[in-house]
Amino acid sequence: GAGVSQSPSNKVTEKGKDVELRCDPISGHTALYWYRQSLGQGLEFLIYFQGNSAPDKSGLPSDRFSAERTGGSVSTLTIQRTQQEDSAVYLCASSPPRKGGGLETQYFGPGTRLLVL
Amino acid sequence: AQSVAQPEDQVNVAEGNPLTVKCTYSVSGNPYLFWYVQYPNRGLQFLLKYITGDNLVKGSYGFEAEFNKSQTSFHLKKPSALVSDSALYFCAVWKTGGSYIPTFGRGTSLIVHP
Image 1 (cartoon, each protein chain N blue to C red):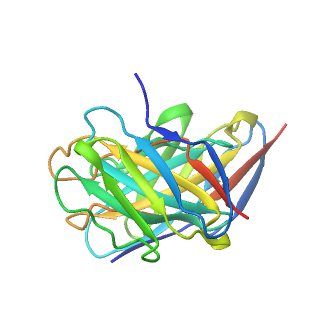
Image 2 (image 1 turned 180 degrees about the vertical axis):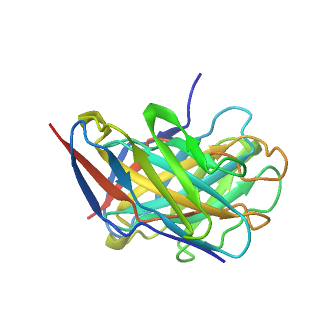
């Protein structure tokens, strides 16, 4: 079946411009996560959506970053007034509904490689 | 609180030799532990996880990991490495009952030499 998809796969933008990154999770998955992966820095958590609950935005690095998830499916991560330090790979992951209250396995998309010039 | 450490940025091993990628964790309470692998220009793929039960967990592609509570470790192992195992490996920890956000390590680059 289809996995998590992300678009675009690559994005080059100029400093100060806004960008939108899209994530299509696996159908039926209720949880959706955004991470940022910078060279040598591992995965940095950004935001977490679970069903219709309010998202956990505790990882967003600044108010230039925002995300929404429409209809409990597709999610868009928006970065306003991009800075060079925003250059990174942005990964999206989704998880199936929880069974027994534990953390489910995450299924990752291929990522969007963002370069801010 | 939860944290995870992967003390080696890079591990080099010859093809056919056993490999170990180290992971240690810190949580107050019972952990869930995960290993993921990332091939170049790809997202992370799930390898295996520990929740409870047997300390030795077997996963995809012949990998296994051993949960050691006294040493707070969850090292990834494989008896015989393949060149195709060369990739970036991430360990992740989640504290049972905590917020549903796992903490990932910085990753370990595994290089298997022919």
